[in-house]
Length: 484
Image (cartoon, rainbow, N blue to C red; front, side, top):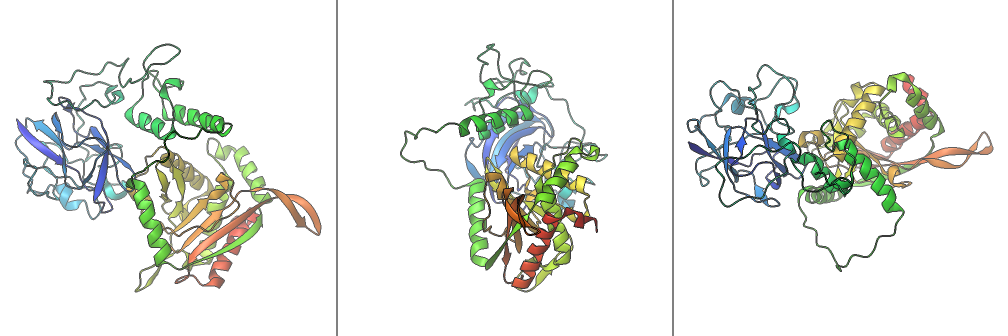
């Protein structure tokens, strides 16, 4: 039997460290190929790591909550296979390309970490190899193998049965037991009892993490899952109700006089990005009040259309289309400054600023300019839901070209947004509410909003900034212009 030390890999985008959030295995557990064994938090997102080996977990080398550098051994696995040759790169290592996730294993924690991926057992293909049709070829992020592919490694059945991942993480024991007993389906993952029935709560680890982030007590959530388990929709529904209830109450002052929150993960990344943007790009901001009555009418018609059945439609969708339309007419707002040159991009990776329990993130919709209205609506809904659940991956936050921030959902009329680093334009959509507005010489109640925008003045001159925002406003005022 051989011991393999699994080092923390670079999960993409050149990240140098990550925090161990939650172990999914314990010493003595048998781990299968591609089985998710730990959840980590990088400066970009939460990431689930699948195992490149199968065997028995011998030791967890890093406790939950600790931040370690890429390359630090985090797990020891005992395998029956011949010791892997860490110096021999696999096809995955040679073809993954820049930014693709890599992993390495060695028989000594003091040995230098190799960028090569240790060879998996004979007859298998490394799970880190890119697969056609997958963005970036990254299998190490997300949920391991996703979707069928001829080059996929054969999955081995998990000893825990269908409900293995419902098991909650167990404390690290000083000595590993000889074998891990399969989790009982009825009580797997239970850390609380329901007050009405006394039955255990069944929920997968990601659902428990989501509930914790949203402040939801799982024991009070009505489950709708097929085995009586709590689903993501159950948690989100409960969170919405809790939010409404909290808004009706005045919170009590905390007993502690102050809180100290470590600056790490997403908060650290936000701080660095904002400082970089504010002090490297000279910002200029413009604002315009807009009659959005026709946009509200258009949204109402789309919601009633059979083509949009099951798709969330909001003024943000019209705003996104307006941005894309205005970018085509004013391409320099969709550019990048590099000191040596200005790169004008003739495609739109549309960033949507999202407030999540982990902080502000800006995932983007790739090639948004090529999408129909219903495709864009679906993409926005998927992006928002993924961000809310904390499942946004690093690649989804890279390569943006221009950004929308919807501060209207917080009841704000306008603001001066800071540019997303690497971009030269950002637009803020304020709240839409009825106000008196002069129409044909008469004062009438109309739905009015304020649209603000900030630009990098090194790239975007005042006249271009003004024309771009005027074009956005013209679509908000008359969405029919999109048909031209």
